Length: 157
Picture (cartoon, rainbow, N blue to C red):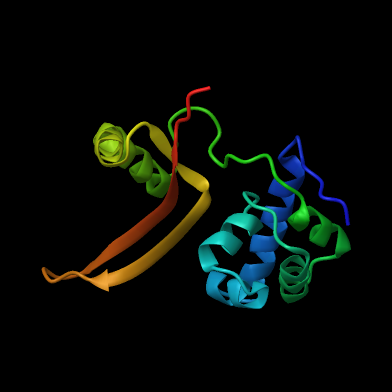
């Protein structure tokens, strides 16, 4: 099958709404959806929410689990227009905290990456994401978020 790309994110947004509604109705976790797809929970969650294309077998497995049709399989396989936060400062409290973290630590991360690696970027394409809940020795729980991206140096041309 030919690889297709989207230019308008609305179809994927509508699919994400339908998929999350189905996931909720079926009382599934993102891990269960990822297990059906045979890929990582972070990648599959991002794909279902419209940020990645799934391989055909994974798209079919997710659609079957969620009770979605062949059109959904096709959409899950298309390369999306990425970006899940419309312009401006995010208003959702959880997303805002990530924005806040980058406001506070963005320049620090940049300085440390460039000092250790040189001029370049950390890839969001060749990338791994993991979220873990761990006990806080001071009581309660902590979120440990690992962002693991390939370093890509800037190349003069």
